[in-house]
Length: 264
Image 1 (spheres, one colour):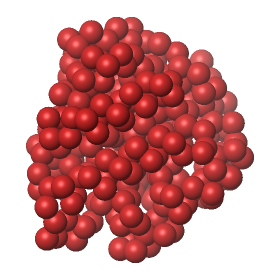
Image 2: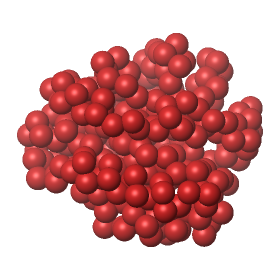
Image 3: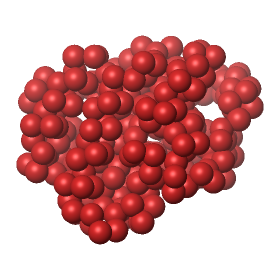
Image 4: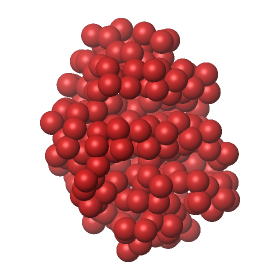
């Protein structure tokens, strides 16, 4: 088993000690674990949530170096980062993503037009198109970000709080363009099992993953997005079962920015 997206106490929204995260992964039998704590420079410019504590990057890097030494031979441990995309924060992210030798970089959209889309206020008085179209546009923009990244994080994240379902049929042409861009750029799409309040089991949904596959998508990975120990590798069998049914044979785990393939 692998898990390509997890968070420790170095993220603003987790209190899980790094050692607890890694020990839990080993205890659950994982072969590969990526720790991908939040680099939320997008929230510096966020108009409805500026209180997100910013990652202490040198402290996080030092902790991961120590962890790699401590757990050598026990689990394949990747030093990762989850970069929150926004146009305004792009220069900061570009500079900081080049300061360390990451094994894997996740590019995610958590804010749209400098608004936190986890905040219920974002959705008040908006139609489905007013909610989803700017988010899909931001997803597309993030794929052209002028900084290094490997994995596209939780496509469909907005559905955690949106009052409408996030489905392929509603925006098929726009989704096709995004999937084609992911494939053309050689990036990997994660299937994320941390859905919170959404009435689905994972993001993106099976309808979207199916279309990605039909268009020629091959690079996928499993991500629990765990912020608590009990959620490490959560729904791994469910997600990989869906992937296998759609014709995927492998999930990717990145080391030194290169995908290593793990048979499903």
